[in-house]
Length: 86
Image (cartoon, rainbow, N blue to C red; front, side, top):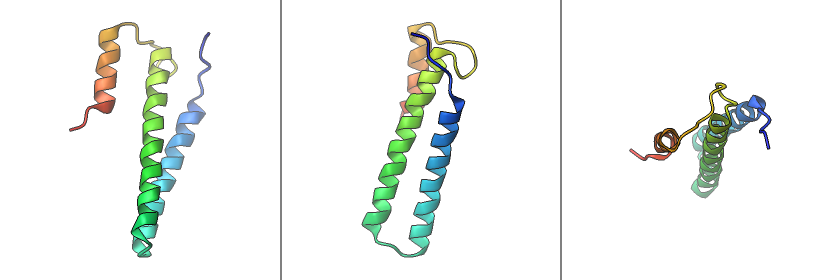
């Protein structure tokens, strides 16, 4: 089954993350409850994880730059870059 490319989905995810980060700043400046802020941070992390998965999927399928990932070594390198904690 061929994947339909949808860059709008990635842009939408980026805007959602941007809004979540702005919300954290606003909540912090308003001295809101830390637990509330932590919930928004948790949601932003989940959104970032979802974005990472979407980016990998787009690269593997060739939606990002028209070049599909074709070997295990290239895929391993991509996963390491996205998920290696420094």
